[in-house]
Image (cartoon, rainbow, N blue to C red; front, side):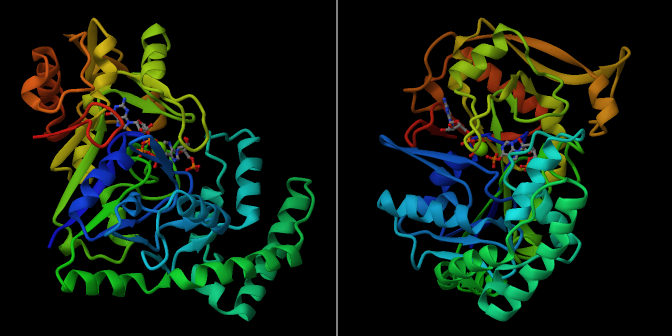
Amino acid sequence: MSVTVIVGSQWGDEGKGKIVDILSERYDLVVRYQGGANAGHTVEIGDKKFILHLIPSGILRENVLCVIGNGVVIDPKALLDEISLLEGMGINIKGRLFISHNAHLIMPYHKLLDSLNESGSSKIGTTGRGIGPCYIDKYARKGIKIVDLLDKKVLEEKIKQNIAENNNLLKKVYNEKELDVNQIIKEYLEFDDAIDQYITDVPLYLNSAMEEGKSILLEGAQGALLDVDFGTYPYVTSSSPTSGGACTGSGIPPTKISSVIGIVKAYTTRVGLGPFPTELLDDDGEQLRKIGAEFGATTGRPRRCGWFDAFLLNYSKMINGIERVAITKLDVLSHFDNIKVCVGYEINGKRLKSFPTNENQMMQVTPIYESLPGWKSELSNLTSYDQLPSEAKDYLQFISQQSGFEISMISVGPKRDQTIEL
Ligand code: GDP
Ligand code: IMO
Ligand code: MG
């Protein structure tokens, strides 16, 4: 029995969807444990492209069961849209999807408050999916959970109470129009009818599955540097994408986790605001964005691009307990004559001993680079490590040495067969 956690090791969009799709062939269950529809996990199979936001990427393998854990915040409309889109593409969902009764619901006022906060002075560059405000209510113990959908009276009462509070806020603080309680109650009662069939006691379900010897893949969303505790706060998301979040967001105890695999892009990207020491604001950055098609899978925003940051990866490896990594998008680097790798940071000429997540320090750091020769040849049709040009092998060896991880998989294109296992 194996229980493996897949974590985004940088600022998200590392290619988790593609790697989870590949690995899920070897697992019985795939579980999402945090985040919400802010995630956009892309899987390309043949000429079909799937972008998953809430449903685990394992759904594309017929024999795999999929679970949404308590740590996820669920926008029921986004969920139902995703279910019907997938069903329209021939994917069976019924009987294969299980949703934790303890997951929290994203309400219309969460999305509204998310966009109002973003128009103020403390902009983060969020995805606007209501993620932060929903987690605020969860921790303020005011949230509405999936289980509340099961009791019409409870649901009505909770919605009324929350809307009364939020209408007050919308009117008095934001000078906005009040929300229509009855309309929202009606809408959520309809969601109830559609979602009831998926609601499950997930901790019990997963622990029973493990007792029966089933294997589980836990699919993180976002990335370590977007973690609310370990990321570049305040420019983070509001959940725990790091491996620890896999336990609290699913009900699988830490003693049952057998390994942690980090998904690592061969360079660095970030969407939204916040420090990014190796960001390239020149033509090289533009080339990475263009060749790597670096535009958000959820919002379509251009992603900020930069060189690989081994100092950051060292930190990510430490807080996640990463044992092995899958390197993605190595093919994108084929364009460059020389490729830089950040091996440390300095402030005023003084080299830092440890990775700073503090905003002020992060804004002041200067990356220390080493330059490696590029390979200037197509990688996307290669199927084994031996076929890689020697410069590409040297690059992989250098980043793995500098970051302190072992590479177990290399991705050279978005499709399933563009993957090299070591
Ligand atoms: P996720 O959020 O971590 O699942 O990543 P995204 O789906 O947001 O972004 C990764 C993008 O890169 C998607 O468009 C993938 O189809 C694509 N992709 C994944 N692996 C590779 C690769 O090895 N090479 C190239 N060129 N594209 C890849
Ligand atoms: P996947 O799972 C990249 C970023 C947003 C913003 C910050 C907070 O596809 O890797 P939020 O809406 O969560 O409150 O936004 O986090 N962000 C992501 N960046 N990939 C993601 O998900 C992201 N989800 C959120 O851009 O900077
Ligand atoms: Mg993504």
